[in-house]
Amino acid sequence: MRKKIVAGNWKMNKNYTDGLSLFSEVVNMVKDEVRGNQQVVVCAPYIHLHSLAALANGHQQVSVGAQNAHQEESGAYTGEISASMLSSVGVEYVILGHSERRQYFGEDNALLAKKTDIALANGLKPIFCIGETLTEREGGTYFDVVKSQLAEGTFHLSEADFGKLVIAYEPVWAIGTGVTASSAQAQEIHAFIRKEIAGKYGETVAQDTTILYGGSCNPKNADELFSQADIDGGLIGGASLKSRDFVDIAKAFNS
Ligand code: PEP
Image (tube, rainbow, N blue to C red; front, side):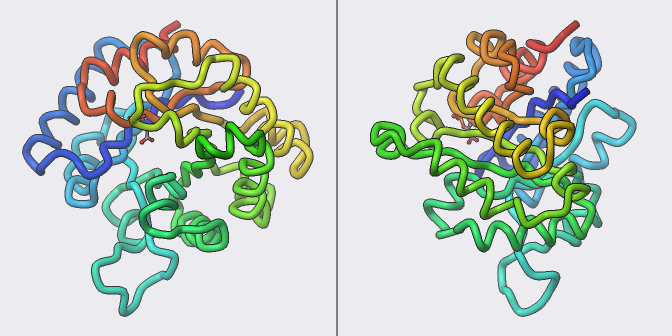
């Protein structure tokens, strides 16, 4: 059965001290309140990662992720962080292809394919983000956009490597806007993504792939979104900055 995951993306928020307090609250709440097999992942800024991984040690349900990694193993890339550096401090997941990286840092599918390779080669599990803009949604091209992001970014992988990915569908028009995709809209495209994966890797791989929804997810809408057949959890931005909201979202999977 595929894994249920609720992953937080702190983006460029929280100084070191505040980040450690927030994460400690999350770890304690998850221990006391989360009753299921769902994995809770916190994707924090680089400065927090080493300490968060130490705090997560011994708490199997909580993992630490980064929000980006460079596409090269090492070298003269001032200011960058490599996948091997991330693994060396206990990071397990890495978000790749977030729409903010695509939009503000010019990351395209070809670059993201390289980042995916290097992340996997260093034992990280990529949370690979795809999703259309408002113009693409309104123009009716959103299936094509999502299909090419998925295929160009990940379909070069072997079946074994593809099986290590988490896919996150994040419609750009729903990120940080307070506008959520309806559960029917999200389910429609999640089912489409799973069908595309089945077409490339077969039904078993498709059924085993965790596909997250992201975009203004909150404790009020998580239950309905996560109850859809092809939605296996969420990638949570704003609401992951409040421990109560974030853990309440994770509790949508409580058994
Ligand atoms: C995100 O940044 O991945 C995200 C989904 O943000 P928000 O939850 O704030 O819309």
